[in-house]
Image (cartoon, rainbow, N blue to C red; front, side, top):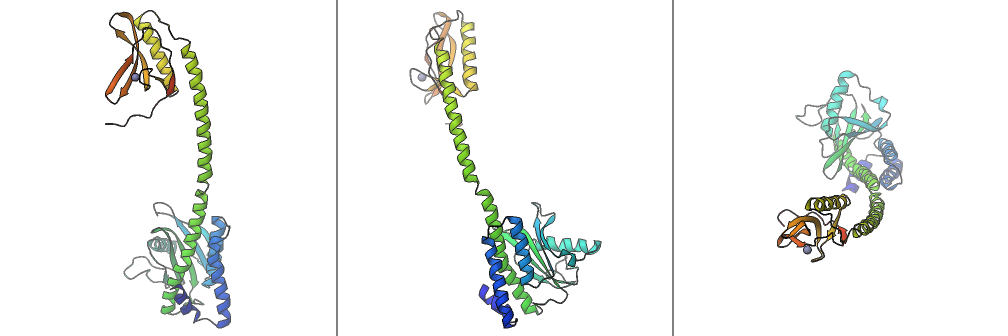
Length: 308
Ligand SMILES: [Zn+2]
């Protein structure tokens, strides 16, 4: 199809011009793959598009999220598009409607953008408006100012071809923009690798802390602080310290991560140290020595899912 559009345009052009034209087009299409940053790519693309379409001026407009404001990200000889306050507003409206286009159009001087459309071209120039679309979303709008008597594309037939042809060219523009956005996100992989390395390092440090805390707690093995209240206070303090670092004690009976508590027990006045944990059968207490046990630590398991 592209070939067909191109031929219909080239028919209109003197044969010596055709070579120049085709070379210009090829250079334009190659741009997307050049190592240019986004701004240079847009500048270069617009400049060459103006050459190709024999346009006096051109702008690449980008919309903000709400499409309420359009910002010129690249411009060529925009001084040729002289607008007073009134035409400026009308031109803004034209651009906003242009953002809703799904394909390029040529808008004649002082004419509506489409039949029944409210916005119109307020200038005496032929304007080509082409939406730059990525994944069905209009990201930008290319505006080419052809002047009151365009060098190329004077007949209605040619204007239609111009629109279709700009679509073809703009596919390469959106490709180039996408590549540059993707290139920006390509640094995600090394960033994730670095994050993983940091995470490994933190895990190593956490293991060192775990061993250090474990050693300290093992020094209390066999101790009893005399009363239930004192033993509970000690057990609570131990748990607070462990919880702060994401640790749990390992139940010596079943090996599950547990919280060490001191509870009232039948005949012991100072209570018993128990391992409190949720097993498949529900909340369970294991153990029950009357003195502080020789604890081993583990990291806290992920939070249990509701209902499981
Ligand atoms: Zn247990």
